[in-house]
Image (cartoon, rainbow, N blue to C red; front, side, top):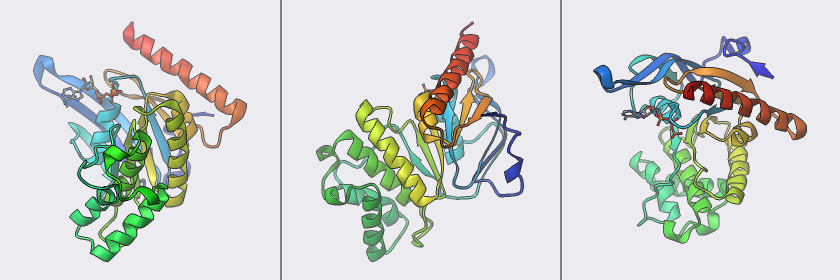
Length: 264
Ligand SMILES: Nc1ncnc2c1ncn2[C@@H]1O[C@H](COP(=O)(O)OP(=O)(O)OP(=O)(O)O)[C@@H](O)[C@H]1O
């Protein structure tokens, strides 16, 4: 089950959805400089679901921001096949004065998509996240889980290239369910897997929850802290029952080891 980054020769010839080569990120200068990430090599295949796992402060958000193009690496290379990755954060950050449907439609409007196409695509996306009946509600009228579904639909809308209606080819998610209660989180994880299967998008999902990473991901990539480095990765696709439990236990043990070696 355990694999190293080098152990993916089957994809060597194909173009990756995301490819990071020797990426380093330092914040600040001189004796105050903090190296958040160092020597990160990572490849995510088209349509692959990868979970980035690590303790608080190990650089997960920094890495996602770099992939999203929200920040630039200090050195190294980042290559994406899409120019418009979809991004979803812990907080839904919806426009409170707009209805759910208008929130989903907003990125399409900003991209200059024609009204009839916008309406059709918004309806499709609300259907995809099972919110068709609440399109006319404002964010404060929705539950936390519903707001995150709207945020997911909006993220998918923002990733469209022009008005050709193509599904997102890369979805970047930063602990999107961590503020939700356990039952809602469980439901939303299932919904996300359904949306992933329906759209065929590649997903990079940041979490500090091993159980979540193993349930969702095809591959779990563990980062160390200060600086963040890839320490190990596991293929976890399709694991259920005892195999899933064993994987969770194994990854948890390794995560604890990484945290305690950092604390020592
Ligand atoms: N803008 C910034 N300026 C200075 N240091 C920063 C900045 N952003 C992040 N850092 C530092 O980089 C390191 C990685 O931070 P990052 O937020 O990426 O970690 P994380 O793994 O996402 O943490 P958490 O799980 O707690 O959200 C931390 O030491 C943090 O203090």
